[in-house]
Length: 253
Image (cartoon, helix red, strand yellow):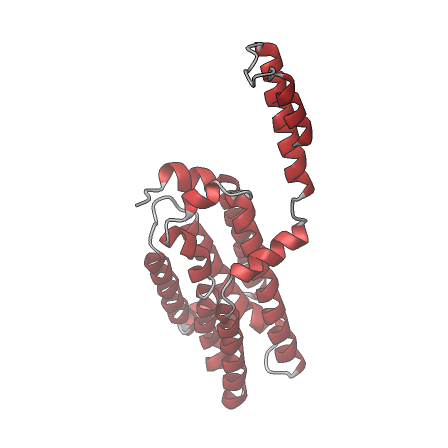
């Protein structure tokens, strides 16, 4: 800023009058802009610092509740003796685990804070990208620990865990992010309702033995891979077009 002040002073006369030389005025403006950008660049946060700051804005009780769901699931596995019936009912816990992400991701839309975040130092895409990454990191740690413990303890096989838990979990995540980035769905309650409806349909499906039994393991794994790919597409496409979706098409109050 000192350089810009110096250039401004060169346009001031002895009595403080401003010279009307347009070229010099434009040079002064450009110099001021450069000085401002250089100063901002020097004080910008690193990626790790940005993630740490975003983590402070996430209410940690959602992660605690996700951990409690997995602990409850572990206790029920022990009490049920890993029965086939209970393994099929595990799909009811997976959507609930994913639904707990929704309040934190929807709070900005519910509070109509998008306009403020669009004018902030960091873009809306960066803010949501950081929050999604943090949730993915914590969920990966929680689910990885649960899966490893269940497999090593002999409660579930890897195939059963993928079919009975991770497949409905991935599909629920697809619903969550598809609704989050949808310009037509502006209600968090509707997103939760869709997840609950899927949970009910999933339980009905896996308990219908004559349909469930004819699906082979390769088909289950293929559906899981498709769900994972579609989830990646929903997040990637949503991050790419989030500003257009929320700023132009969504109707804010």
